[in-house]
Image (cartoon, rainbow, N blue to C red; front, side, top):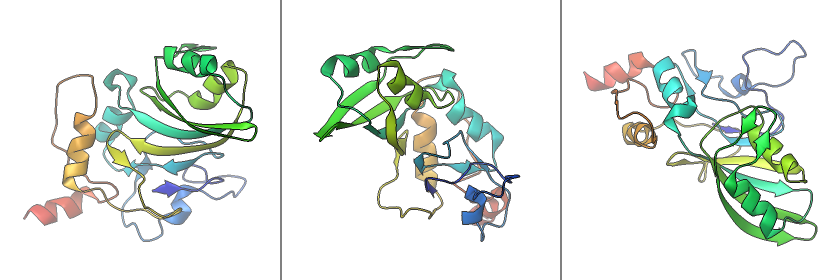
Length: 196
């Protein structure tokens, strides 16, 4: 799913704000977000009905890379980007080193890409604050080898079997592999029917 900014990754909101489930009106099985993407962020959000699949992608032990495009409130120096690469100290401890690539500077803003292997709450935003700037825009563009590509904002598609396998193999953690019965938002029942 390409989650639009302003949508919550929760089933229901007491304040009646839009949720990602408002975009899944024709999905016939319950699915849940794999990891989080805060209300002010947009981009790639995987949904599943397989808890083991979700655990494999969200447990920091497996080090599944997540890539974001970031626009900051200030121009960032090379030193600031190096601090992100090395890892910064947050209230909940130091972050792992990250891959960081400056995309461009425009006026008073820097656009950069960052790839992290953790998924702490609002981690990228807090990392940018730790180096003295703020995030104005945050888009998750990839999880492991799966990229947002040409998917339109607010739209979703099912993952192929090959994409699910690639996601599982993108982790640097345990070598234990399990064949999944789920691709994207396709239910386990539908997958079994495909194999019969």
